Every structure is written in structure tokens, then in C-alpha cells.
Amino acid sequence: MLEKFSSNKTFIFHDIVCEKQNNGKTVKFNIDHVVISTKGIFTIDSKNWSLPDREYNQADFVFKDGELFDSTGVLQKDLMDKIDSQGKWLEDKIHEWINQRIPVYRVGIMIGAYVKNVNKDFSKFWIVNDSAFAGLFDREKEKMPMQDVLRISDSIRRFVEKPIK
Image (cartoon, rainbow, N blue to C red; front, side, top):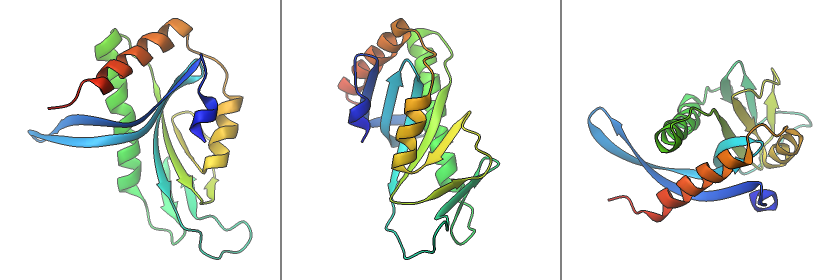
């Protein structure tokens, strides 16, 4: 689904292995997908969900006031923390690479699920299903100069090509 966005203005990276320090220990993690585009920068954590039988318009997930709840009402704090920390990690890396602070959209794509976005606030988090992501991305206005897109894409490409020890 993401590859259809790949163009001379949009670059897609998959399965980026990263490291960060947590309480004095090195923790490795991955970012499923990164999209660098004139429309912005997106870290994407994708989750596959099997679809239970459900009534029409019943949400598998509800995203409200910056919090994600599953269909039983359980807060998905760990998942939201993961999505947020991936975006923060990339923001920090971009600052390190090009000495510029650029906001990163934090995206959770729930493949095969229905996500009800109560506040319709997509300013920082996009918690959506796969088809909703495509529509949001298509409607997003261009906001980054191509020069920044190329600099950041090149930095990510070099980072991915350099193995982590």
C-alpha cells in the first residue's frame, strides 16, 4: 500500500533498526516504515488485526484525546508510547543529521481494523486503518521543500546502510 506513494517527491523506507539508551542500557527497536515527502515525515507502526464478527459501525479501536482504546475499552498505552517514541527518535536523528528540528507525524496503521477517530485531530498522531491512511496522505498539503526531503532521505539511506554494532 505504501509503495504506491513512492515517487520523486516521496521516499519510503522499511524496517529501520534503531538503538536508544534507556536507563543506561542500549535498547534496539525497529520502525516498520518511514515516509519522507514534501507532505511531511511519517513514522509508521503497522499492526495486523484479525477481524472479529462485528455489528455495523462498531469500532475495533477508538482514538480520542490522544489515547487509543481497543473494542473492550482497554487503554493501549504501550502501543501509543511506542508510536510516540519512534517519532521522537526520528525527530532527534533528523536534528542530529541536518541540524534542523522538523516535526514527525506519528502513525499507527491498524490493518484490517476499524478505527474511530473521535476528535478528528490529525495534527500529531494518525491512528487509522490502511485505507484511511491513503486518503489522509493524499489530502495532505505539501509543506517541506524538496531540498529537505532529499537531505533527510539521503541521511536515512546512509543510516540504514550502516549496520548497528
